[in-house]
Length: 632
Image (cartoon, rainbow, N blue to C red; front, side):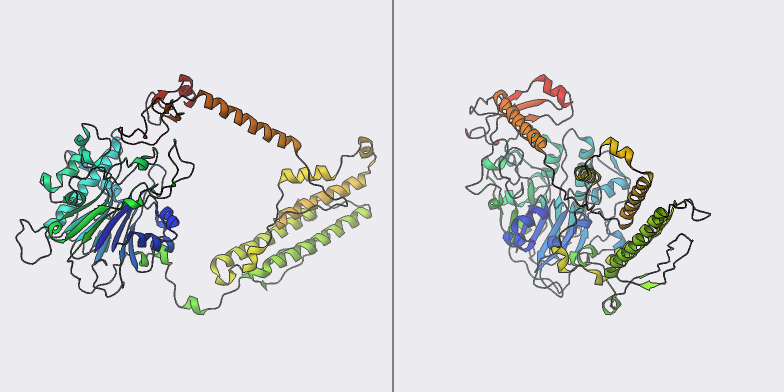
């Protein structure tokens, strides 16, 4: 039996890299695969990211928006099984739980939590922990627990915290202290506990490329070492137990400095095991699970980015972004693990999540033919004698709605134009008040009615699209040429180019009747545009020619030339690193402090051991003082 842990740094990206989720899982070739940093929220869960043939999945997603991010952590456990129901395979868990405080699962009364309940507030090393602290611990989707009968597996993504960030350090401290309580509780119940994942802690100096003399004095490293057998704790660091003296065995590499190029990283992805072996008769002195059932444990270095020989070198960055995570997987192989009694997939598996497989529907929805929507068209079209034309109730489908709307608008347009121009030809002006309780003109009144009709039909079509399965788009829809909607500026430009300005003398010679007629035409055209909600092409006897913009092209060419001149000037001012005689790369200070925003220059090569002449030479040079003020 093989268990693998892998910080994927975005499950969507890794699935895209391998072509499918199944190919990603197959490349790891393990019975239980634990992913961290999936970066999926609950609404991001989909079949292509969480379900693969032959695997059962269990996920935990972020439930909060820390620092404006909604998908920044998350874990997922995939179990390779032959059958999801009535199976005796160890890979298929008996029970599963999201989180580890017991607060997320206590309403469901999971058997796995048993009597484990934390009653807040309580103190942990002089730090008071409240209910809010416990809820925050489980709100970031950093743990999924699966009970495999012979052992309880914790898939953990430990929080990261800088030394000067008090809030995150407090969160990280509470996170691991509550985890420790849960582990101790399970061990006291006679369970075997497996902890796998990215803990974001390198336990010793041998596990870090550039460890300082006081590296091991960090409070979280001291806490992790206190859990290990060599320091009196219950857990074995499986990799270090199987490879006690191996150096430069790293699982994480900083992508900001190209550290993977020279294997310059840290070992923060771990597999920890605690508990006795599975043998019935033994003395507890030497019969630990590690000694009796762990065959091998190693790092899958083939997943490291830039392993291929044609990968571009790091020069302050890469021209081509390397595919892959900034972590590499770690695996453990177990032996002599017997089967379990027959059981089925736990109810919190992905196959039962509505966001993935859809909400359950009744059988009636599959037997009833799609209904057509009913619209009551009772809009009144006014005439010059205040006559009303009432539309009877009609039954229309989503396909006919737009056609009916166009026909009504066309008829209304013809009616309005005939009426208006007949009044003009007879020398009469349209009556500004056709109704005692309204101050709208005839065309405005008709516009309001038609706008109501158009919006009514549009609402009906939208409702049909949402609720009726018969409103699915046909294949022809995707081959239609999109309509070009002209903006106000483009329409004005087209109008200016099409209709040349008249001579002022000619304007004064125009009659008042033609002016009035033109105003009515423009008014009705504007209202028609509001009614239909689509663009209207203005046709004229003269063909509109496409305008040319030679001035814009000249400006673009000037901008390109100016930018090239600035780049050339920057190259002349960039300092040269002393180690390789190559141009440096510029960086700026991101951390809070007096130098925030200040520019500096460093060697462009990738980070690596100081003994390697091909690696970064460590050159550092501050930029001018002006850049600091500019960034402020």
